[in-house]
Length: 403
Image (cartoon, rainbow, N blue to C red; front, side, top):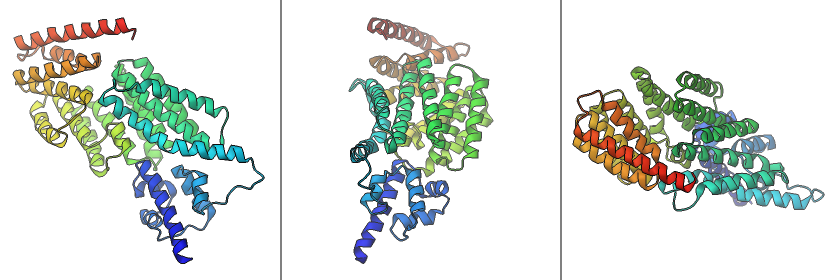
């Protein structure tokens, strides 16, 4: 009997650990949200400490989003009475079981799309998922409700990121607003903070810099107020703040923000959250390099690119195109125009293969940035002409396809 009891306790610990890791939280972050110590969480996960009070179990399950049926299965909750509606309960249990992996699948959709959007129509799949969940929510509530809303929030986040890549600003803004509204309804502080960060980034992309700063300040205040915000989301804030600062020419602010982002990135393991939101050590190193280039310290940026070349030698097509283009700018500003133009031409060809006007526009901005400097020689002028032709070809192609 003792062995059987230990197996049950270990099953609960394994369940807690599994759902914690799905959310990308450390033991310390879960402890903070729950109001206990990291060691207390560790003991529960290892089966060294038992939770006997149902209130404690229910609270922990609520924080992690553990379905009631999973608690029943391991003896940590009382099965519903037979007098209740069995068909509805079975439906809730089935739907919940289907939704558990769906959240991670939605996050993974960005990685698939970013790798090669032509493999499968990810955008249509996400839109259909949102619509079907809306239909399902008209029929089912219970334990299905909150997980379904959370999946919709993540789906809107991914669709917003895809809209940015397609230079569909209004569409991206609408998706991030939907994400914020759903996060508010859920009362999910982490998702609310992420939505605020995305909204600040969209304001910056519209060149509404003062509004972007105000929205970023609101996100920062929100994160300070809610101590349970994950490290990953805090890192996203500092990354976005670093970008705002280098775009605004604030070198001191940029260095402070990118140092904070780096410190967090070095502490975090790689998870679906870090990958789907492009927040990891390599991404932050690249933001530092781009910022240093924008602030006219290209030599320092080139040193960073030597490191990122080694840390990430293989990249999906879309990522590689972007990487070539940002390196092109750095080489040109460092005076190595030959290498810079080589990177630019390679990156432009890749970007045109998946019809990314946004990426090629960066090269036009590079040429315009160099035009008042001695670096703007014949090779850069020729590059500018190639860039203009590439943008025209892609614009024509989009018009023909009705995009």
